[in-house]
Image (tube, rainbow, N blue to C red; front, side, top):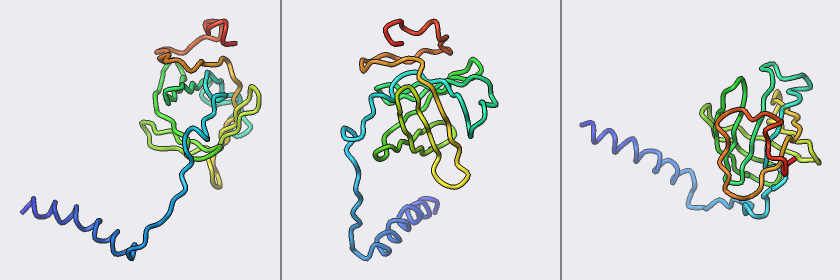
Length: 153
């Protein structure tokens, strides 16, 4: 009996989706990653403001790597996630608390991340160091500004 219930539970969404589609295929435009890649995003960033206020959690740093790693450093802890480009000037961060969407803008040494929608947070960051495109694993502790590679400043 439990196998029959499982089969029905798996089959029901497939039937529902087929019935809702009425046999028509929806076209979805997806930008190729190479067209929306943002090498200026790579590197280490420090959060200057969250919603026009200094960060409440003290100093927070972010790292974007060429391998798609997003690392958040706060309070001596490193929280790892993955980021992908959703569309031009949009990215997603898939982390332990779920997926977060951001509109982003890189302007020189500043990065602005905005959560879309009403009430979404806005983060303003300053670049601390670039990261080259080679396979460099992210550090396991919060990097000190003085300890960043001299050629990356």
